[in-house]
Image 1: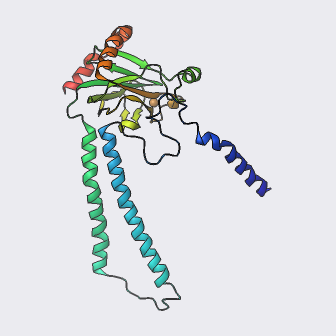
Image 2: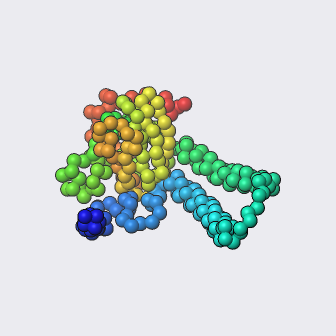
Image 3: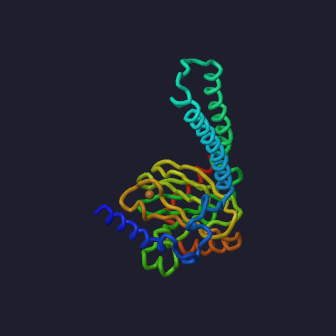
Amino acid sequence: MTMLRNWGWFAAILAILPLMLGAPGSFAVEPSLPANWAMGMIDAASPVKDRIHDFHDLLLWITAAIVVFVMALLLIVIVRFNAKANPTPSKTTHHTGLEIAWTLIPVLILVAIAAPSFRLLYFLDRAPNAEMTIKVVGHQWYWSYEYPDNGNFTFDSYMLDEKTAVEQKMPRLLGVDNRLVVPVDTQVRVLVTSADVMHSWLVPPFGVQVYAFPGRTNETWLQAKKEGLFFGQCNQICGINHGFMPIAVEVVSKEKFAAWAKEAQTKFAANRSGVDGTAVAQTVAQ
Ligand SMILES: [Cu+2]
């Protein structure tokens, strides 16, 4: 019976293997999506994400060194100090030098980690030279985007239904009807808030994750270094449709963005009545 069950699992894995391997190129926009069997993190599309990768790599090296060191100590203990090799164990209970070392060395390691960590935190906290501002508002269960600097228009961004997503060759649960459009190589200040419950605006290729709280505006920034389509999701459990409020950011050339913004002003003009443009301007002024 157990044997049969094991084989059942094996057959199940065999059956889903082709699905796991996937068909490369099945999506219209590949670069921003995680690739099957790829190593490392998603490609960086912003300077912030570049620095996050660097910090991750630094930590990986430090962790690896600690693992090797502890493993070596363990092996020495196992081989040289087992009951057979060392029948009369030492009764030493204190060693001042050793105790200072095993306190001081971890402290130094933590300080070495803290310095670049704080540098990164301050780097991603505020846009040093923001050229434009967008406001992101979380709703149950969609996002809305406001462009106070480009004609003060606003629009909602809903997930595509399954049928439309297939038609538009969008990855499942990630395509949206109205994308957030930003110009390439432009520092964009992003103000994030919520209209109802807590949400979180997470866009991994840009290294951006900001909580959206009702009654509070959080700031972050992004500066896309390449054109393309990038995806993110709400990553704060916000209710029944939490998994269905994706984020799609389209990065276009500056000229294309100007043309899009002009068009969007008329296209989304009807939405303008609800925009709290003054609130955005005040937040920026502070
Ligand atoms: Cu949400």
